[in-house]
Length: 115
Ligand code: AMP
Ligand code: ZN
Image 1 (cartoon, rainbow, N blue to C red):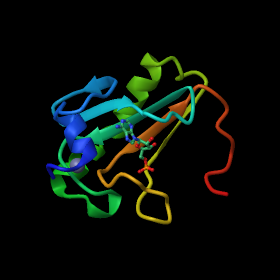
Image 2 (cartoon, protein in one colour):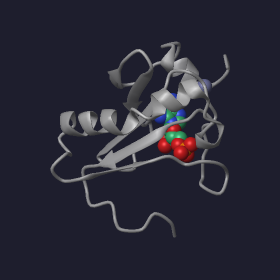
Image 3 (cartoon, rainbow, N blue to C red):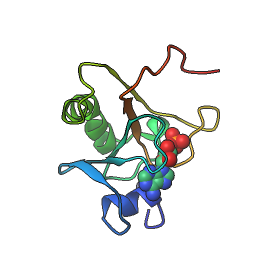
């Protein structure tokens, strides 16, 4: 997936504000943050979204909640609380078709996930 934006970020071909990296995952600040802390966590291996998991991306994605909790602590939002979500497909509003989880926090996020 050489043209995929998030593949390029994972390969460091375009810049991003990285906050975490390991062999299989990378996390970086969202370019249009919706909350004081808004981090995207992605598997390095390309996968369009939750409907397209492969064994490799599923294994990497399974570790994302634990990594999110670590980043939340590092970003100072563990005590206040945080949200982890992934948009899958058009109705969910997915705009970048490389699997990613949004980690959001730093303010009250409200109780509703849809309008
Ligand atoms: P989604 O709408 O769930 O597909 O989320 C895609 C997210 O990617 C949006 O929140 C965008 O602001 C974010 N985004 C798009 N391009 C970049 C980029 N170059 N660096 C960081 N975040 C980006
Ligand atoms: Zn990709």
